[in-house]
Length: 122
Image 1 (cartoon, rainbow, N blue to C red):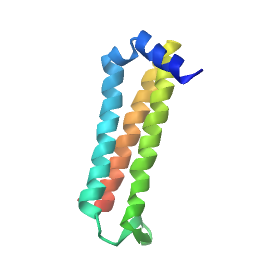
Image 2: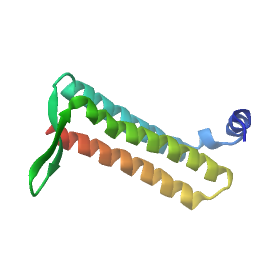
Image 3: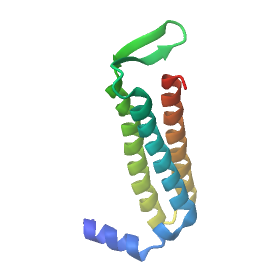
């Protein structure tokens, strides 16, 4: 399917007008942006920080603060992939699968935000 056909399908369908779907996607995007901002504000130019903490042995991974950007980058990739899957299943009218994917999208963003907050010790 070409990009033009995909864009036409978006315009023809009521996908972007569905308040439930767009609220989940925009909420996930908002949480991802908050995660990026927390990293920039609280870890910007700090140098070496603890990247991973294990309950049994304590800090077991130390690295440059820019390595934290991998966490929201993974979240953004999951958000994009889930959004395309939601659109795909929306065209095929698989509503239960749509809401499962949307709940997963939001849950992943919340978990990643919490992990950044725990690393930040805020």
